[in-house]
Amino acid sequence: MQNGPAATGEVILIRHGETAWSLSGQHTGSTDIPLTEHGEAVASRLAPVLADRDFSLVLCSPLQRARRTCELAGLGGQASIDPDLAEWNYGAYEGLTTSEIHAKHPDWLVFRDGCPDGESPAQVGERVDRVIRRVRENGGRVALFAHGHLLRVFVARWIGLPPSHGAHFLLDTATVTILSDYRGLPAVKCWNAPLAAGA
Image (cartoon, rainbow, N blue to C red; front, side, top):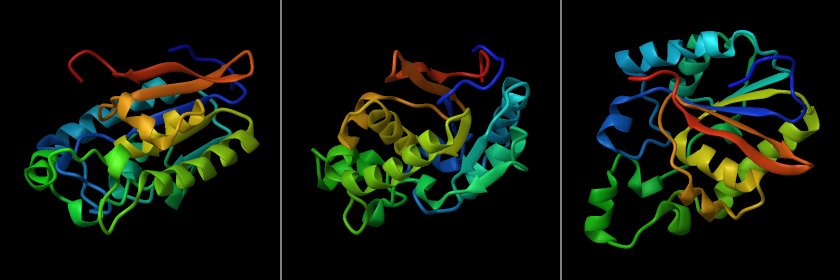
């Protein structure tokens, strides 16, 4: 990833570090659990990656796994909390694994079907669209600290696809993604980049 002066419209997305539920595969929406020890160690490796970049705006989910990742990355002092960056509201599926959900609903897909008593893909898309407007109005380099499903919807909406297309973008914990533009068209510059081998 290249460093240097702020790029117009460049957005750096950071998914939070590992948690116990990201390891177990449980859907973690509003459950406010901390990073694991390994998650903290890997998240701290973000600091040198981001240190020589100037950000005109840093936004962070209100959930502690994202806030702690932001702090360990060295941007906690610049960050503003944006509730629109909170993870998908999984409603009745909160804390369940995909296998547990599929035992009752074999064809369920969060990006298509949403969650009972939770959010639909369209509702998550509306939140993401508000953040995208804020980012584009800012015009400079922006860092966003958030969550897997939310950020997958974000990239879909960034390039003009429906929220359901987030299903096509896999995203690991403690990774960096860069969104930019190509000749005026929203584009993906770097996706799901690990911080280091073995991270």
